[in-house]
Length: 244
Image (cartoon, rainbow, N blue to C red):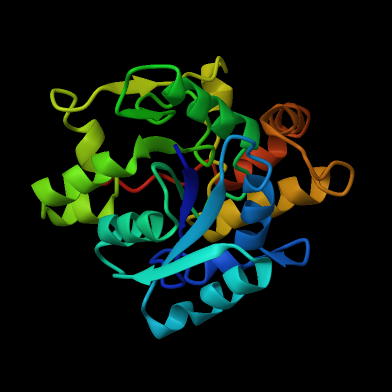
């Protein structure tokens, strides 16, 4: 199966507009995420799924500059956008990610893909039970499953949150969650970017770890936050937006 990582990215996010191109050590956040995703050994390609709104022209320009695939589609119907992006890339298997996760760990994604490939399931992720910090999220499922979902629902929430319908219908789809083994405190950290405070934390982590080790992973981040608990307080008050 051809495995393609899709990255949902747009400039007009509600809480922090333009966040996906904010700089991290001199490079756009999306570029840093792509740099990390290129180290996923079990993936065959990357495609940025952005919108057809003029504000997202810079995202397309960056994808072209970095030599990764890109697709433009509906801003609101993200499900169709991702499905069309995956089909355009010739994918059989989608690894769904979002562009607000510049600390995503390639080894975690490789583990999810391997777990999907070695089990008889329709969907595999690390979000059904949150034992990883927010920002390490990834979901793996076949293009055929997402096409099935597209035929079954027009609910706006389902169309905005690509895989929501899949994991809300365990009676229809075979689901599997991968746990981290982290304790509750470490699993509770926010390593995603929705707000200025989130961005401040991620920028601090990059500043501390990247110069010495461009391939730093989750273990390195955990060690840093144990050593520098003051960093984790930067965004501890931020709450994840509910999908419904």
